[in-house]
Image (cartoon, rainbow over all chains, first blue to last red; front, top):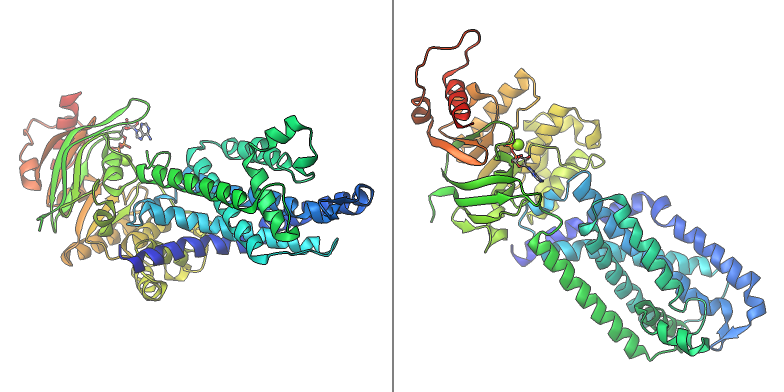
Length: 258
Length: 254
Ligand SMILES: Nc1ncnc2c1ncn2[C@@H]1O[C@H](COP(=O)(O)OP(=O)(O)O)[C@@H](O)[C@H]1O
Ligand SMILES: [Mg+2]
């Protein structure tokens, strides 16, 4: 395919899924808006006033970035996982792309971009919801956007890989429930790792989401438990590793072809 | 330039569960042919088509489409192939026109080019009135035609149809055959599988019969029909000549 043809194919994949995401917005955007409103209510309004300040900002402002990331991570992941899984398992419409000249990297890039559309979209919705509860402090909007995009990319790649391997609906719900949610909760959404006893502080440092939340939080409050470049480095390295894995699986057709 | 649309050499497929679906299959389909791949259920026809079109991974041998190796240049090999699969593989919640136009997109054809083309093909196949409905509102015969429309949108030079007339009424079957012969007249090479042997006998130039993953005979229609041993017909129903050869050969084997 020429570069132009590859662009057309990429655009087709993205357009189709973006339309789907928008069409079923009560299922794609509303759930995160509602649950994060509850978080903000409980941790901001109810508990926040008793906790006081963390790292120099109000408690609610401290938790906003983590709550946003929780939504971004789960949405980006399940978007790609669900699309890949249903189109290979139920309708088998993934064949439409497999029989075409679309190269594996375009296919991966297309589905990951739709995951980014969903992840960033949901992230922005949750940020808007947070405005009902607090004034957002923003230190660097570019860093915020960068972390939104890269985090969405990482977890939609994860969802892609999971969707390719899954052979039942449970196979795509296990990871969000038993892996992603705990990692996010233990990744310093609600507390500063510096305030933890040394054992748990050390364990936290093995959690990739800890770096993501810290980098993202840096974009808001201008401080974090780890240097920004470390956070960015960890995130970029993971994106690269997942992208290569997804590309390799697609190229070999593992899980997608019979 | 290669003179064959498809060349298979020593093709092998063993599925993950150990089923050996193809066993040393070699075939050649000349450009411009109307080729019938015949065989009983479970013979390996769909597997063979799956390998050629990129939805099944082969476990041995090689396949070339218009001289291009599907392993070393998969993207080039797929560009001129259109496929109508045996089982419906359509997302039924998508609109008819979107299904066809998006398929063009996967081949790198922009929407502005694909839309008028899709309209024409849907008209030719009698689906134009249904263009804006979701595919779940289509009947079985309409879905089959939608899959044909989807397979033709990038104007393939090689069209593969896996039991396109299964479960389709007589009227529609006739018009499908007319449509397909029309395509071969324009130079499109066609490979099809079917259980309607009389139709294959009339329409196809070359034929191969496959049983248990092994090609048991191949050649021009005349050559294969000549294999008819003329043995006295059994009591009761007797089919056309191809049907008799088919039964003779596929039963000999087992
Ligand atoms: N995904 C699969 N996994 C395991 N075995 C399969 C699979 N698909 C087909 N088979 C087996 O391979 C053989 C050939 O099947 P198929 O190619 O569908 O035959 P045909 O199209 O000629 O009816 C059959 O024994 C079938 O059961
Ligand atoms: Mg079949």
